[in-house]
Amino acid sequence: MRIIKVIERILVMIPIVVGVAVIVFLFMRLMPGDPVDIMMGQGGAVSAGEVERLREEFNLDKPLHVQLGLFLSDLVRGDLGNSYIQRRPVKALILGRLPATIELALGGFIVSLLIAFPVGILSAVRQNTWLDRLSMAGSFLGISMPPFWLGIVLLLLFSVQLQWLPVQGRIGHDAALQQITGFYVLDSLLTRNWAALRSSLLHLVLPSITLGLPMASVVARVLRSSMLETLRADYVTLARAKGAHEGRVVMGHALSNALIPTITVVGLQVGVLLGGNMIVETVFSWPGLGRMVVDAIFDRDFPLVQGTVMVYAFIFVLTNLVVDILYTYLNPKIQL
Image (cartoon, rainbow, N blue to C red; front, side, top):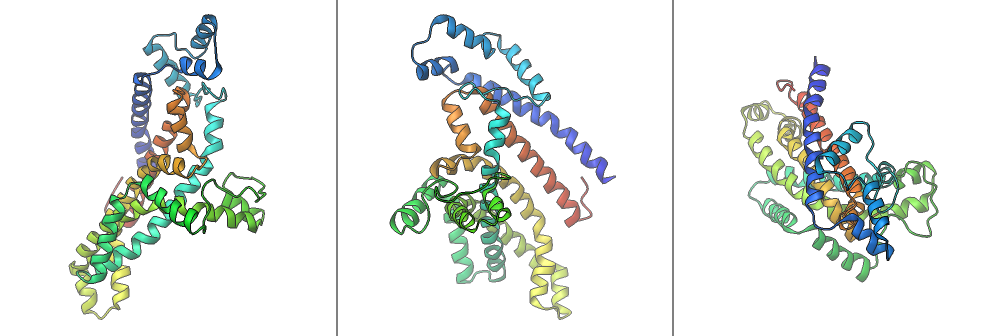
């Protein structure tokens, strides 16, 4: 029965993905600037015949509804088209950059959870103490700081002034790494290249903190509110009356029930991680999807932008499906 429900949810998500595809397609066409004109500016003088040939090659000479139909039909077949500027398949370009983006997102996700859960739990247990006030003030500050500003400040402090951490990139130029999966940390472990592992981890520190700190602030505040509510519940009072250890009451009874609204926020914050990595990747020169799509937007590279946004949308929809499935395990009363 649960498998049938999952299949039903997947079928419901198909119109959402199609809607995102149509919106992205239309928004790109509404942007000022012509891809062929931009290519002409990069390539120097181009004849009128060459311009017409390029427009025909890119299907830009066809009506808008015909272009949309071609885009959707290619999308159904898994064909994301070819990049206007790089003249390579979009799928290959995305697969080449995707490991870097996932690695950074996982780093930010881990940082956020390592900060959010201790802060949220301690703030709830020590409500109205100096620790609670300090934690909530810190979380408010984390939400308020723009990622680009935070990244620049961290770079100036830890990379320029203290010179503890590298400025940009994924790995040092002197670290020779044999790439297997595209995930530098994992490849370093698989090849037992400890110098490359150290270099890749050091390069990951500042971008992960920049990406994960705003998410940690949001999750910590939500977890604190949920914990305060569950700590006042009757079943928690009963557990304390029976003489249960306070640690078991907090971690076993209160936290397990406070996780449901918290997981909702964590799932939604995945979209923030994906959207925020465009800024973070640009600040730290991280060679991922975010930096690539920013360059593609300026170049009016329609297929590359559309393909990348579709990957973001698919990951976001898939994450929300996983969150809904987790609900059923945390609370059997909830059904898909």
